Structure formats: C-alpha cells, structure tokens
Length: 169
Image 1 (cartoon, rainbow, N blue to C red):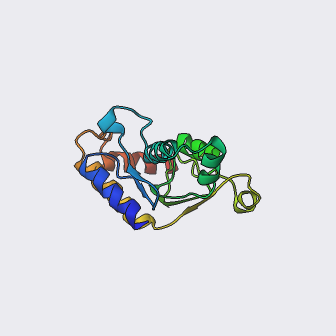
Image 2: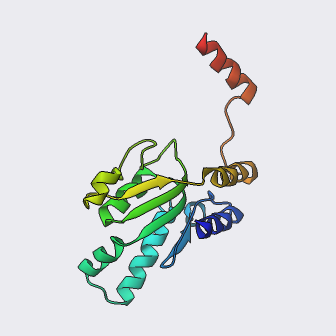
Image 3: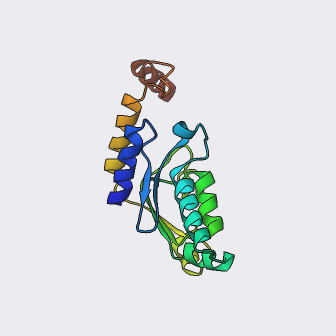
C-alpha cells in the first residue's frame, strides 16, 4: 500500500486525482486529465502495463488469465464501477483499497461488482477490502483544495448546512 500512496502523491503533483496503485509487477496512477481520456484510471493504466509486458513475453491468453488470477491490486481509492467490472472480467484475485468511493464505487459503496469472501474463495469473483482510509482522504482533500479545475460548490457551505437543517425539520 505504501507504493500505492507514493503513486497517488505523484498523481497529485500532476494535478490528477490522487489515486495510485503499486505492486511488484506493475504500478500506475490516474492520467485522466493528462490524456484527456476519462477511462485512464489507475487500474486501466496498470492493466495495460501488465498486458504489454505479457505480450512481449508472448504469453498465451490462458497464461495471461492465470497471471491475473494471482494478482493482488493495492489502490488508494475503491475502484469505480468501470474498473471493478474490468477487474472481475479479468479474474483478478484480490483488491485492497484505502478509502471508499461514495459516488462511483464498484466494490460495495454503490454497486458490489466484486464478490463476497465466500464466493471469491470458490473462484467466482475477487475479494475487495478497504484499509487505511485516513491518509487517502487527506490526499483527496489536498487535491480538491489545490486543483484549479475542480468544480466549486454551487452554494456556500453555510447555506447548504442551513438547507439540510431546514429539510430535517
């Protein structure tokens, strides 16, 4: 997970959403802003790097599938629905993420595209667990404070709080 946080900090320096992934076989970071391509999430970057390596090694599709079935992904934010679906399709073994993704999470925050532990143990999906959220949340806060391209709230915070209070009454 330390390498994932290192990659997330590199993304933050490039004004990308601070999401990173890292392990022995591949590492990556979000590059959606840099490439002007909304699909260039860290998971897709790492998958492409692995597939490129394995193509150079001339691995067969069954060998590639076997390699993915042994991979464990460490990422600083819960994979989105697109990435969680891709990871499931590829047959990844396990995913550890630092903080949840309340808007787009595919490991249970919005949809559960990874499967529960007992199903994953039977080879029908992958395990997905959240760990170490505090450091990741801190990186996200820093990103949204620093980045001039992040959307600004439509209403001031005080006004939104009053509206919430009014709706509760």
